[in-house]
Image (tube, rainbow, N blue to C red; front, side, top):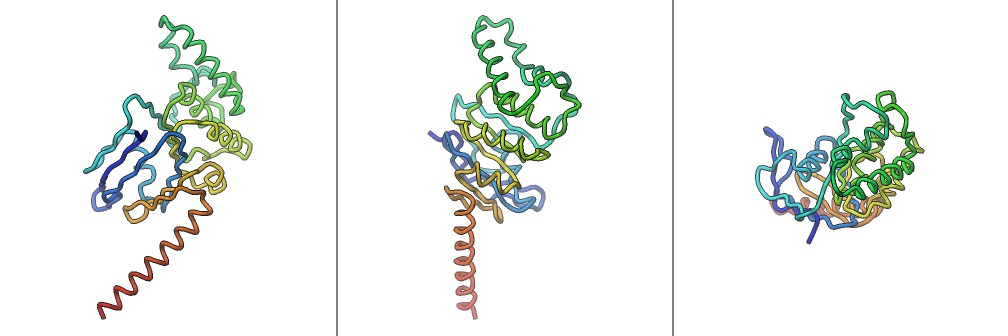
Length: 235
């Protein structure tokens, strides 16, 4: 069964239609890039999958027992503490648990991921750059090993070294990854599937970004040819 199963979903905000009966399934191991013009609905589709907004019609189903996490573009301003304190803050709720082995393993995972992302565990979160803060928040959601990772512009404000470290972590991620990015180099390196949102519909291709561009151009040329033939028949 697919991790994510979207069937016949439609959604409009006021007079703007974002989706018209779109369907999409995502399996474990896929790394899906959402592309499209600004305002086409990329971030909205992430939020539909996350469950923070609902569609006007259709269904968005997540496989039972599958855990998803969503990392927004915005960095919350109220977070305090060191990098390691921020990353492991949720673990404090488990300290009274009888499963202390799980707590220990999660702390070990936190140390591993912060190291992989090039983070200084003792650094104060509030004084970090925006890009570093985003890496801390990514480490925070990764330590619990989610099945689905939803990322909105994950490379924003990051320098080249940070992006490379992020790529390495995401390439090792074994769950389903769905992300939005304007960084074409990052997209090309990470994505195994491209889904373009265009005029409320999806153009879905299982391929790298270079192949996607070729296929999209061919599809648009075919569409123009069909439209020209249709117009000719009307004359």
